[in-house]
Amino acid sequence: MTSPMKVSVVIPTYNRAELLPEAVVSVRRQGYPDLEIIVVDDGSTDCTPAVVRALGKDIHFVRLQRNYGVATARNVGISLASGDVIAFLDSDDLWPPDKLRIQTQRMHPDVDVVWGKTQLLCHDQSNGAFTPRDLPFGSVLLGSALIRRALFDADSVGPFDERLRQHEDLDWFMRARERPINIVLHDEVTLHYRLHGNSLTRDDQLRFIADKTMFLTVFKRSLERRRRTHTAGVSLLPRPSTQGVSVIIPVRNQAQYLTEAIESVLGQTRPPDEIIVVDDGSTDDALNTALRYATRICYIYQPPRGAPAARNRGLGLAVGDIIAFLDADDIWLPAKLETQLAVLETRPELDVVFCHAEQFVSEDVQGAVAHIPDPLRCLPAVYASGMLARRTVFDQIGRFDERYTRADVIDWIARVRRRGLGTSTLPDVLVRRRWHASNLGRMTRSLDNEYVYAVKAALDRRRSTHEP
Image 1 (cartoon, rainbow, N blue to C red):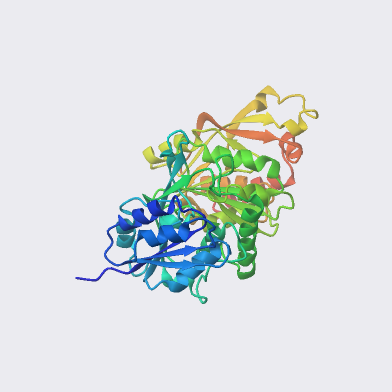
Image 2: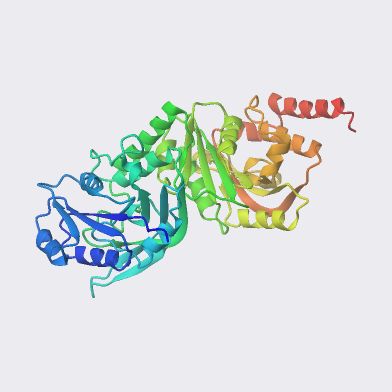
């Protein structure tokens, strides 16, 4: 019988004497046969040393001379660890009883990190109890992970950045995702995160973002590293496998609309499996806007090359079998994905499904436009934001033609129809298309030279094959 891998549990603590014993008990309840517990006291001024001594001699206790920060405390614990894998637990959090059993079973020889879900527990001041809040969710909190010891070596991902007083876990995770390592994510809860009066994260703040400036700094560092090494974007979401839906949002200097676009995707009755935002050289606040959703999207930056190139970049990164696009100035209605996906699933002869769109005037141009003419108020959404397509379509006819700036989707649809692939336009209004200052001119003109060129190109293709 194979011996179990040794697990080193590192518990950094600072002035949490009243909560630390419960954390240690939750580790011991794992009943794991080969386990060491390392408690690193980061300069506590309360009775932490006495509490640890009372917890038993099996705990390896280290006391730092002053408060250096949790990154330093974690690194000290790692340096003392003798296990094959390392698990972390903050002293005010808890593990569910099966955490180590669930994750060690998934730690196969080719796996570097196993990451589970987190359950929030809120403190009830009236009775002192912690009760669950919201559904479990994926997070980058280290307590929900099991990590190979070797990843903390200098020639791998490396230790935690001790310059960071907050978000050192997010920074480490970003560096890990930039490397070719195997991270397995699963749906079981492996961390109970306790929110209380002294928590770094409070209820009235963004989830796990105690210092917004430092949070954005961590992501910008990752972005700069990826620019230098030409590596792909970093997603904090599990990647879809089969029948996954990937949503691609190209954006350039439309930060004022991007939040509403992303929220409309996140609010779908059938949520997507992957959201990729491709920033095509924005000079406004698009980066910071996108990074507010950093734990739920994959953000990519590229020098300005145009919307077709941004769509193609997203296609190159997407792993879903079903592809959807949303322009950053448009909005999906909540049932958009669910409605169109149901059609693709029940009608295998169809390859692309469109819908209808309601057109509306953005608040920033309402003074320039009195109203939308009735014939234009509701139209077929035979363009990027209105379609849902099987990935196989792109394999057959190729991606968007980057020579265009606006007619790339029209050209692509013409190639789909020329190949005889199945398309359908639903009568359902599932998209809201925004009229605003940047697109008003081209939306009120019937055709410009580029659209004429796209139509001519389609006619030339038909003539070259002698099609009627």
